Image 1 (tube, rainbow, N blue to C red):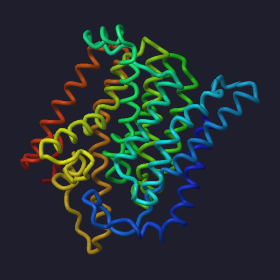
Image 2 (cartoon, rainbow, N blue to C red):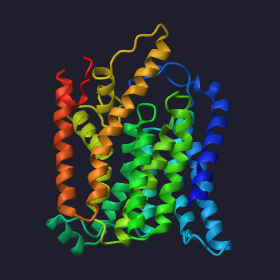
Image 3 (cartoon, one colour):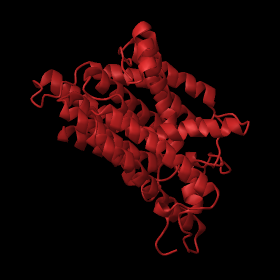
Image 4 (cartoon, rainbow, N blue to C red):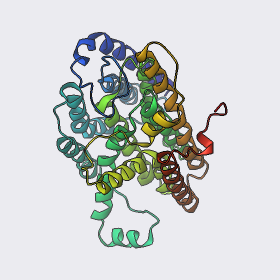
Length: 370
């Protein structure tokens, strides 16, 4: 597992350097007037390619070790790993095309992620058989296709959830690392080394990408990178719960409650204003943190000043994520407690969001020097 992580990190690191060198001129074509743009200068946004290269290299090495070297590390990374990659291909390819051309509409990207979700359900056999919600579990028992529909929705939606929180240097990438390692920890608790190896190598590839992304912001993950994170974590979450019933289905839900609730709240917020959920805006939680909580940086260079404020935003959300990850790891097999923490997060998020909107910054976010 260590060897896979090293390979994933180095391949993503080298691929990221090559992309930065090659794509500088291409990045000049990106629109500078988008509402979600919080940087100056031309930055390549195809870091997802570097992330994918590192992940594929590590998974391929794991397959070779399992198939041709006797699987001394007990990774069990057989041919199923290529099935995962093929399932991911439609969505990730669509994300990279959008990053390169900026011409793939939200409708087509949703269709491609839905195609990946459908492949996961029909080909990999992923489904949701237990939710701990009495009425819903009864329906799933009577009509098993409902569990498949929930799995499809989860796999199709999670890539877009990561794309929504991918607004500042290191934000989505570090959230992905934290979630992958938390899932890997529980996978090891139930002795699923294959799943743990997949997750740890993905986290390592993400770290290779983050070398260039945080704090210098030399490359962005783009839609392609967000889709890799969302699909790997979505497939791993469903697989972990399906293979090991001792793991509560609310464990991955609590791990991912930040990007999931950010997406749901964003849809509600936009529909309430009569705006299509697919229209980008600058009212996400991390964008409000940037504007109203992170202190202004005094510097003569506007580009450097924006970069420094950008970098100071992400740690607030990393801490926000850890507030859900820690109890998720501690109570990974205790459904009632996990459900309670999910509800607590939702309430805390809405209270904090409304307070920031009204310029009443919650005490937990205040800088002691103010």
